[in-house]
Image (cartoon, rainbow, N blue to C red; front, side):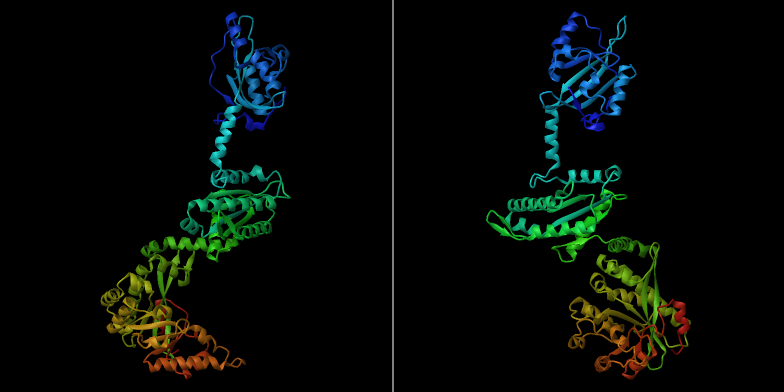
Length: 604
């Protein structure tokens, strides 16, 4: 009888016990006649093996198990009969038991019967107590555990597969993924790379809600069949096809071991999309669905299962955000930006409490005489990890999570306090106003009017020296509470400016009914002036449009500030068509408060 083994793993017990056990078996005494009869009649297959490993006696059950008579087995090496020499660890433990250095050996083996069928056996080897004439050796017993193994295999299959689609479930998928990322899996050949398509059906919840979970389950099963077919086709010329698994809900994953690159994964993703786009006919319900797929492909070395799935999940989110019914490849740069965004969002509120923000100020200069009239307060975040950050990196995050309210209060108080300090430090100069940006959420989520009144009272700054800037898209169409707040602030004497004018709604009729005092022309209009005097003829339309807006603003009693003034040629043209104030690098970049003090009383 020949034995077959599954290698070292075959030496492990089903319950995870080691190949060898340290528990000491009770020695078996030499057989008196009654014991000999019990040995022969026992249903458990047993054999007595001498210290050299040779069978010296075997009961009928042992012979029946191995397809031979007891006499035929006598004199045969026991290790050959039950495959104890197929792996080094088991063979060493067996030899130690024979020599009396180890108490017991227990292992499992897959044996092949002479009639052709295979069986699983549990092998136990224990020492026998010797008599006055020497030790008889060891007792070897063999128990047929095939039925138990088959039951456990069936239970494991049920545990590891989804009942709706019959695909491997999340547990089995992660088991395979983890194994594929072990060094021994990719260092012994192959490409050393791994790929993953993470798929989610678009709008699947609507199917459950309208047609019921029974139809939804049929749809999932039909999708699983198409995904499996795509995987089989993709693996036609390869050793193994991609593993298809249902991870839960309407989420599926296809794992590609030894991938050849992003092109292979892209081709697979394309085939998956096309397969799912074809209409489904489910018991009289004809429906069409689509899917979004996140695709990740990378070297297996240095990759973890968690990291790969996080990348796939992120990429799936991008595919949905980009419009659905598409696949998207993982982009490290885009992911780094997302991670930075998350890191900033999670630390915004604590950063306000820690005092990590500061203000810089950019001059607003009178176009007529070049003197400083005011400044715009611009927030900066001195982040301990990412360095100095400008507003475009974090203001939107602050608006989304509501931290713009406490941050806005800090900006308002700091800017007003600084404007009042300039006034006290330069009593002989006309006081300059400070312009502060305000988000619409500040109006809705806080009492902006009360905050402004309190700040002006605490700092001693006159209301006309404070200007609040709101974007055109935020102001146009304002009604209810926002409009009431703007009107109350205007009645208080605070200036209201519309920032980036000309890029939003531009509802000029509505503009006349707003309590606005200043229009700030968006820099895109001013940039059209920049080539004058450089040998390139200016575009007459630019000047016509800007001049028309300035004239309209003046007729409505508003002043106009031009943003992004960078050259003297631009300043000259703006001055010629009546622009009131200018702001831009021609006059100064945003600077610290002490630099503003140096500009007061100086003609630009």
